[in-house]
Image 1 (cartoon, one colour):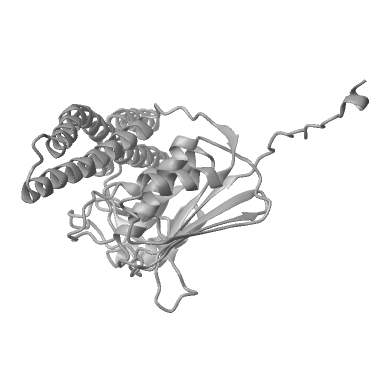
Image 2: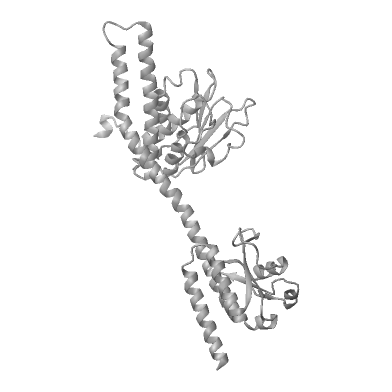
Length: 405
């Protein structure tokens, strides 16, 4: 009868522990619930040690003083093997006598070390089934809290990004009308009669130039907001890449006035399926960056080649290139990241981010680095577009009148 009553008491205590652990939101709460169970039911004390992906141990509660001495070798054996390890001799030296792995559904999260307080090591060893049940409950609670933390860390950036995109979109829409009015008023001033003086004409041209530049920044903000919101529909057509290159160079006539553009195309380039408006924006952003960060008179090179199932496009300049820390990394393609964070050159760091979003929407890739083949260096951005299977264009056969009859 005494054994039956004790077993019922232990079962009830484990049930209450499971209920409390199901509502725990922090590891501190898990440690407190475990301590209460060990003290009240098993006359023991314990410490929870967690292991990261690299197998490095850390206490579950960083700021809490350890309740007992954990023998690291025994703890490592229990963690690596996923089996309980027991050594009653250690209890005599003040160390934990039992080391139980925290085997969660996904993986072993750590160990819980237990040492007797009022009972003997033999009495604690007799409670192994209850200890293992307790360790299983703690492991599930620890894993649940881990994934809650992961979900929160993921959700916060998503919500922040969504809010930022909404704000940028709203501001950009509100700024477009006054910017268009500024450009129109500057043109009206330049064409007014009687003609303006030289100083007034220069002021009108400066107003127009700055308004157009600000309008370009606003367009980039709008494009980035649309791309992140997934509201851009690709209007793909089979077309020649050289036509988009030519229209981009023509569109940036003033920005490229001091930079000769050299275009090298591979022989027999096929038609590629892409959205001409968006790919033109990619070329415009890359060419504008190349002109902005390279000295006047230096050439900008565009090279198009074929790589198995891809068309590869390289845009290179003769400037200083990217920093060693950023070259070849994805950091350059993040929003509001600039090659030179503190620079007098205008820009907000959206050009490359927009390029990546557009290229990836076309199932392509994009990378940024420095030109190693030139001693003076220079930046080079490479993006690819899938070739696909272009439609077959049948040649028209001209028949003379006799053959036609």
